[in-house]
Length: 158
Image (cartoon, helix red, strand yellow):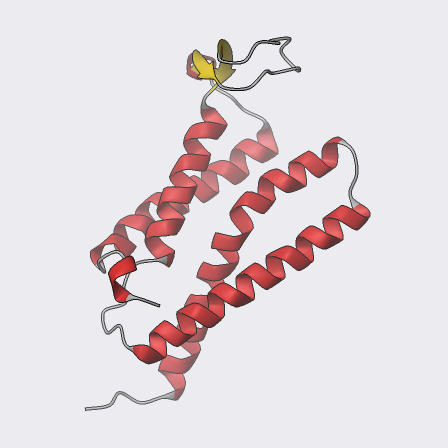
């Protein structure tokens, strides 16, 4: 993996400060269903929305921006955490990063396959929404777990 494609190391800390609150808030909002009334605004929509009755392409619809804001913060934070250089970025870490990414994509598609087989109707839409976030989440968990595990087993070289 090219080091040019990674963010500088300082973005990892910023990413954690964005990711953790977004994750907590996303779980809280999902459990409670809370949506602040002041976040309902008219937004530009590219596609028709059959649920609200809007049948036109390129129209204004009124929606809650709660999920949009939390989802955007989650994605931005996860990208910063997952794709920022480590302090000592070398070929070994690049190899761990690549294998973790391949592992995350594989696990994600196994979960997606299971969803196709066992989940139906509107529950499937909910699973697909969560599926958007699982690749990044699995990658971050696996990458940091492997880094932590190898840092404990290998003494520092000097």
